[in-house]
Length: 235
Image (cartoon, rainbow, N blue to C red):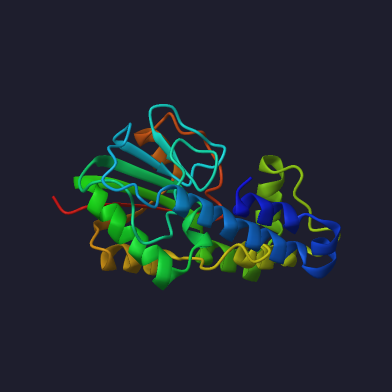
């Protein structure tokens, strides 16, 4: 058993549960998973991908015909916050990443990742992103104290619970998600990050636009709380 697997097992012992909060143990486990993925691909450079379509941060939402990538249990496990992707330049036609970038630090991880994605995309290649939308969240809080976004979420996530707290608590969940979220975005901020990394023609779109372009993706039905953006590499 690897040292990393041993460390993960230790996080779930009764002693660890008494010493560390659930939030701390989850974050520690995620960092260990990232380390595992980084060590696994340490010597992998200029790897030819099995598809020219990259699904980054796929989780359990695998999409047929795409290279589904995540830190664990994917087609090709990597730590995509490492600052270096293992593929040659100009090999992908498109990248889709949904609700991933908010888990990464903007300056240290997201901008370097965007630069790498620009490198591995072909000229004119597309990047499609979604993440929680600061503008929509703040408007909901000011106008409805989050009641509308809570109502929107429940059909999609029946097990979600505020454990008796008022709906306004949902704003903390969206901004922090038990320490898992590091940066949220509005269009201006996300467009800045993409243009800083060299992307052009940055546009705010809707989930319907993503699904029209790539109908094989399962619908999230999360437009009311999410920001959808499309950009391209210079041709």
